[in-house]
Amino acid sequence: MDPASQELERLAQRAAAGERAAVDALIARYLPELHAFVRLRAGPVVRARESSSDIVQSVCREVLEHIDRFQFPSESAFKQWLYTTALRKILNRHDYWLAQKRDAQREVGLGADASGSFDEGALLDCYGRFSSPSRGAVRREQLECIERAFERMPEEYREVITLAHLVGLSRAEIAQQMGKSEGAVRVLLHRALARMSAILSGPGTPGEGE
Image 1 (tube, one colour):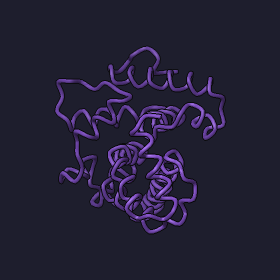
Image 2 (cartoon, helix red, strand yellow; image 1 turned 90 degrees about the vertical axis):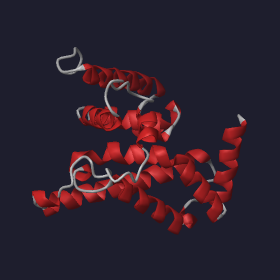
Image 3 (cartoon, rainbow, N blue to C red; image 1 turned 135 degrees about the vertical axis):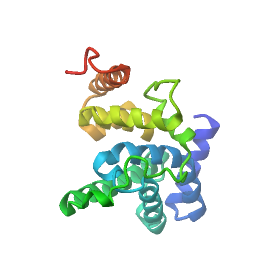
Image 4 (tube, helix red, strand yellow; image 1 turned 45 degrees about the horizontal axis):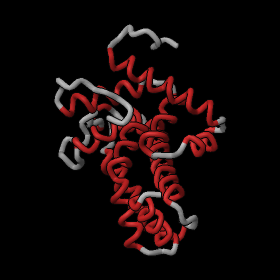
């Protein structure tokens, strides 16, 4: 294990012991990935109505308020706790907005975070782990392009990409979470990345209709 990984494991152990500073450090480490995860998994219903930065802050606040719930001292366990908390909040907000059927005046559009409350460069770096947006586009156009492409993917593809490239789980961990074999996960991830590339390449690309 490399020194950086060893340090993360030590932080996870201290976090499991209830040390607030260790939890703060782990959250700071994964904040860019968490923000990318929230924006992608929120989908258009939530993203059109709420700031992803607000959801991220809510996730961090809940994690910090309930340190006692983290009892498995490993980096992987902390990441799964963090992202599971985020996904639960996203699903709750999605259900809320579908039930409320708020009028269009409440919608803030895809640029809900346009106030600059997040680092667009850091977000693009995260997206760049699984996509290659146009180099000629400005940052926000690139972000929107990737997010729209992501929404056109089957749910299983979206899940495997975020678990592999944002949450950073191993193929074995993904297999366990998705109820598949490691081989099936590798094939699924390959197909998901290929589909993402095809969609970003433009409409009518072979493979989009699978």
